[in-house]
Structure formats: structure tokens, C-alpha cells
Length: 393
Ligand SMILES: *Cc1c(COP(=O)(O)O)cnc(C)c1O
Image (cartoon, rainbow, N blue to C red):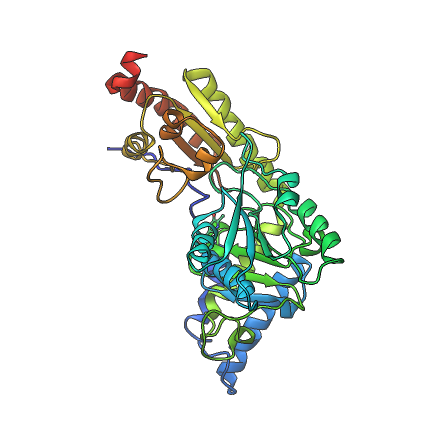
């Protein structure tokens, strides 16, 4: 029924940039060698692998041997968490937050099932942890702190540099070092990431959140970090992530990261403008809404709004009928009115139930926003008229 197609789910995944596809293309056909082979095909592949690693290392202010290619952001998170705790003889303590992506959250829950102890830090109403809470949580047997850079549902940015600085200070006087991992999947390609400024030991990125294909990730591991592999096989990626390297995708993620970093400010300004247009329009046109995570320390491209008295899922289905793609925030929002992130932010269950995440990307336009602002108020009103909760109100 619809002619318009408006994609506002860029935090779930992005389109692959045409320039990225062009860069990848030769490695599927002509230059298809295995990077471990000694013949010319292999050497071509190896050279592409090295160049891509160099590019990413330099953009992160890291060394070449600190960059590991993986199959996803999820895999990078898993290698970081299990790879660090597996180096210990005893089952120590891990600190993370209540608002992590499931790749970190469920990994930590798995650790707990296996006898480790995990502290899940609270967040305030804007989705930010408190550095003081983190300081209080550190124990003698703490091995790892894993705190996401920016949250994928509400965009809240955590104080990574401050945490890194604090951990560096206390590590100077500790027998066993506290390692620091950050899941930077939502900030990679959106903000300048410098691992030395952030003072992290491990950092996760995922290609498909910044216009590279799905199924390619990066893990930065600081030199000197004691880490063990979680899968076993060949010696690829210094045996931390064995398996034949996916050269086209490696080339793709490096190219996409390069392009994104060359246009950070411009892109940020663009998505911020669109998000503010949508936010102001929604506030003006639709009553009984709440903006979730409206603090200052947040990503420019995410707008999370609760439409009271209706179900987020119902709203998504209706929006989809008009060609508008948005999200409830997390891929599998079940249980408590949906999201564990909104629950941690103490959003009341009724409002959390009606929460929608709109996430902008480079390719969105003002026309996209205008179209949403034309359809959304009508859809919300229609759903509310069918809602028994709304009638009571
Ligand atoms: C998408 C995402 C992941 C998972 O990355 P995949 O490459 O899809 O496995 C991890 N953390 C955050 C914050 C994300 O947004």
C-alpha cells in the first residue's frame, strides 16, 4: 500500500556503502586467495589483510598487532570476556552494567552460572552509570570491568575515559590487574575512538553498524593483555581467533571505518538535525509521550520515545504498513514491558511498553522526518482509541 520507504533503524544495522562494496568486490573473484597460502593469490590476500589491519589500527591509535578481526560484535564481546577470565585459576569477580547489549549481559550471566561473581551497575534515569558506584564495586578479586561506550537503545554515553583513568591509578597498586573492556559498537564510526585516550585494554566494534557488511567485527586487545582464545584451530589472528580470514569483509570494514572517520562531524551534525526535527515534531503533535534518555551525554542519532497507553510492537507493525522502519530498541524485548535498559532507567512499565527507538543514519533526509511526522500522529491516535488503558485514562 505504501510508496514511501523510511529506514529509521540504523542502530540495528546499516546499508552497506556503495564505495565499500566496490572495494570488497575484487576479493570475491580475482583475488580470492587464502591469506595463509604462500603463492601469489595468498600473498595478495595477506597484503589486503595487513593493509586493512593497519588502517583500523591507525584510526584507533593502536598498534597493528593489537587489532583482531572477528565474525561479529557479539564474538568480539565473547572473546574479550571469556578470554580474560579464562586466564585466571580462580573464579573471580566481573563488573558490568544493567544496560549492556545481550552479547555482554548474557555472557556475564553465563559466568555467574559457572561460579563467577558479577556486579551489574545501576544507571540513572538518563541511562548513565555512576563512577562512584563502580569504584565501590571493585574488589580484590575483580578481574574485568566491561562497560559499553554508548547504549544501543537510548544512546546514553558512559564515562569510559574516566573509568579507564581510575583503573589505571588503582592497577598501579594491585597484585592482579583489573582489565577494562568497552563495547564500542554504537560509537565506532560515529565518534573519534582513541584507545589511548579511552584507556581501555579491550574494545569491540561491529562493521554492520557503520555501513560495512554484517558478520565482521574487530576486537582491540592492548599489547601485554593476558588473554586466551575461546575457539581453537589455525594460527590466524595470532591464534586468538582461528579460522580462515574473511578478506572481502575485512577489506570492507576497514574501508567503511575509514570513510566514517573522515566524515565524523558532518555526519553527526546531519543526524542530530534530523533527530531534533523528529523530536520537536513529536512533542508538538503527540500528547502523552516521554523522551527516554534525554540527557546531554548521548548519541546524536537515537531517539527513544514512549507513547503511553499503547504497545510498542503494535506501533511498529502499523508504522511498517506505512513503510516506516523503527524498533523497540532491543532485538528481543520480552518480559517486563520490553526492555531491560528502560527497566534499569526506572521507566514505568506502562511507558516502557510503548517505547520506540528511531535511529538515524547518513542516508536519511528531512523528507523522511516529514513523512514520519505526517503518519505517526494518526497511527498513535488510532491505536490509542483501541486501547482499553487509554479509554480509562
Ligand atoms: C549490534 C550490537 C552488538 C552486536 O554486534 P553484532 O555484530 O550484531 O553481533 C553488540 N553490542 C552493541 C552495543 C550493539 O549495538
